[in-house]
Length: 295
Image 1: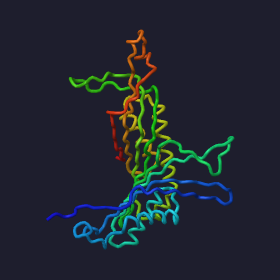
Image 2: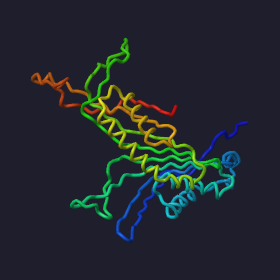
Image 3: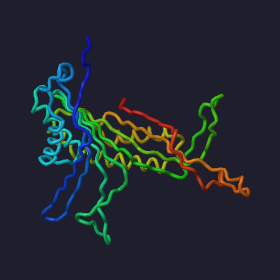
């Protein structure tokens, strides 16, 4: 007889915007995020015998996301995710896990005539700050991250010495354009409850800023022998900067820029050391992943 071996459900793509107003200074702080909350528990009968009596409606989950954003801080997002997830366990005895994913949009304060504006912002690219929290009665597992950070450098990258055989057409290079869209996550040691998350709240913002700085500094300054070598160095530095983390993962797709041979037109030189005009590529593309953990 078929059985339900795993199930979760909830509300996805819930857009939330919150403004915090400092009445004393008149300074506003804004946060825009997209939230997904999926529940697990003793819900099998909703699938097998159409028993809706065990279903917390996804519309109720959406409403709860808004209410908890009003009742609790949304920064750092790790803390908000912990409070949101724990609510469902405390409220519904048959729910055993809440999986909360958050993507925070990047609104950067405007600087006008050399001064930060108190309530005006601009969308600073497509980069997002991400959080995934799994809240159970045993504790809270959190992964923080960076997604959509598009970076490029026009030199300082090489790739040679790789396997060459009858399937190889790629030429070795000692100088190339390197571009990627950073997807980095770091897994925190498990915490028992939202109070413990709140106690170390400052670490989450610091780790995110450190990880972002480490990623860009290493990318920019290293004479990269390969994406693999560079991403390992990034991950190792994040582990050192955030001692409460257990592991770091990177997924870096290659954004290729190919030289264009223009020699057919009046002998124009545009390859090798003479290359100036390139053709940005879409796909196929290389994709390199790694997870680096403490030994």
